[in-house]
Length: 106
Image 1: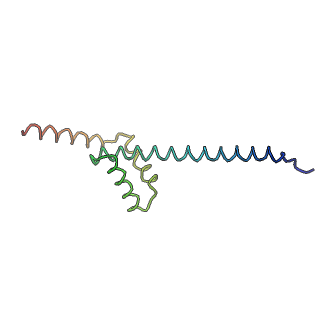
Image 2 (image 1 turned 90 degrees about the vertical axis):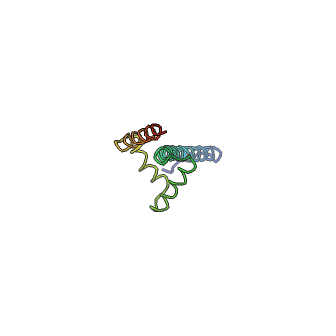
Image 3 (image 1 turned 120 degrees about the horizontal axis):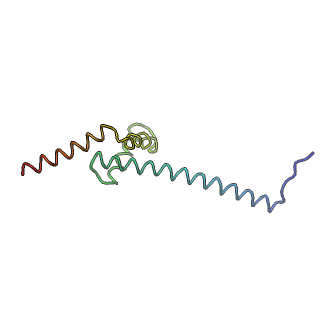
C-alpha cells in the first residue's frame, strides 16, 4: 500500500506550520540564553562595581580568553550568583566595612 500524501496546498500549510514551530523553539532557546547572560552581567556588576556595558565587555573578554562561548561563561557564573555563597556574603560585608571605615575617618 502506498502512503497517502496531502494535496499540495495542504502540504505547504503543514510545512509552514513546522517552520514556524522550529522558529519559535529557536527564539525561546535564544531568549533563555540571553537571560543567563543578563544575570551574569548583573553578577559582574556587583563584583566589579562597574556599569552594565563594562560588565558585558568583561564577560566577552573572559569568553575570548577561555575560548568559550559567552553563554557558557555566563552559565558557569550564574549558579554562583544564585547560591548566595559565602564568598558573595563576604564581599558585601567587606564593602560595607570599608564604607563604614572610610566614613569614620572623615
